[in-house]
Length: 105
Image 1 (cartoon, rainbow, N blue to C red):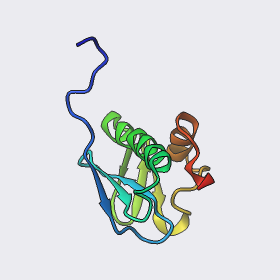
Image 2: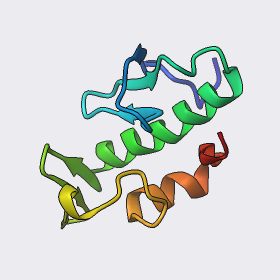
Image 3: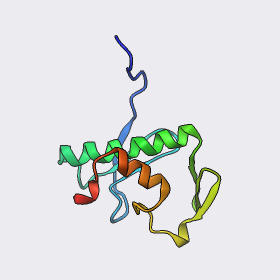
């Protein structure tokens, strides 16, 4: 095998996610995708690619979250004051810039 290669592929699970949520990158390194879209391979790949950016952000220490806040590079963003998934959020801006824009779905 020649590098780069992945020794630990990202586990992906289909789940019933809240309305409007297509995917979620978890702190434990797993990805959840909406069970409503699993028959669309292009959309599924786009969502997984996007969420893998968030997992990388978590591994780098740039992104963290809890039930009340999202933390990006030391700054706190209250969930109550943001539209989650908005491409204007700094962690989303990076993910959207590096992957397909799955908002087209």
